[in-house]
Length: 338
Image (cartoon, rainbow, N blue to C red; front, side, top):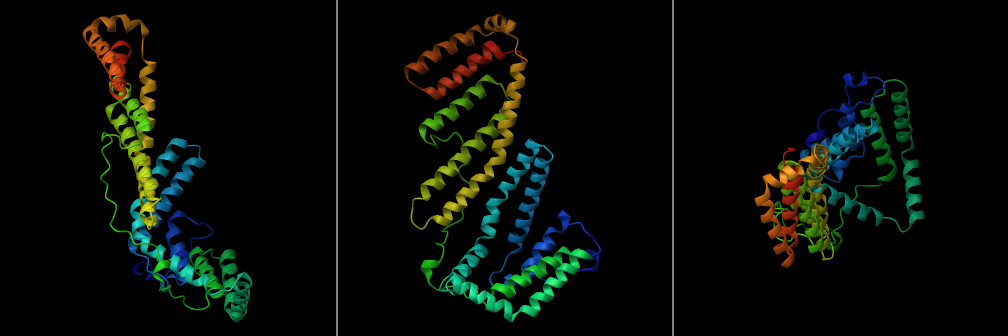
């Protein structure tokens, strides 16, 4: 594990005083991992480690925004953090599977919970001198240097000396393993105008709303498209995951697709908020006194749209009808305001 090859304690770090800053977080986690000797059980790739810290930092920024009452900025940061989960889930998949297998094998070492307590108690007694020394160093660090990296390392070491009886081997029974993921998920579902990508009632409602917004020009095209693509692609991925969830040996693939759906949450959130904000501002500038003038200026288009409305109702083409109604709304009410 190249990420943890360097020394974890330094004079500079010890002199930081009693503050645990965001910049120390990676050092603290690496120290804990070294303490529990995680390299005995799995190899955490640099991509997994870096991605984990990037995700955690994004979440911390989002929580700070929420804490200061900035709901929009906090949600923006949180949904940006969600977009990091898709690649992170792939980079860390092997490590997670290793730890799951180790956990399964670990549980097999005990007949029942009482047996577990007996063995842990014996382990603590066997390593009591080492554990007491670690506790003493932790207290010393808390009262003097506050070297949180060393505290994390010592905490991990206590956990190792308490619960690890010997290096646990992964089970060889293939039925206990998570089924392999056949191929990486490819981002091909990015066309929100594909025919009925969702269940028809939901698709008609969403696409009808977006057609009305496009035609009425209440908001900018870019904002509407971001909202449209984000929402529909998010729901499309959730639908695919729900379908796979009922199939045998598809748990891992299903999990990946659920995580991938979160990649669209930031686009959906920022796009839809911008669409609502722009629409509200446009409606605020509408002057109903201009309606007679707009009717005269756009009479030909209004007449054509009226004919189209009758045709769409006759053929029950509700999606096209939404667009026609949006165009009528623009020609009669919105025209001249944006």
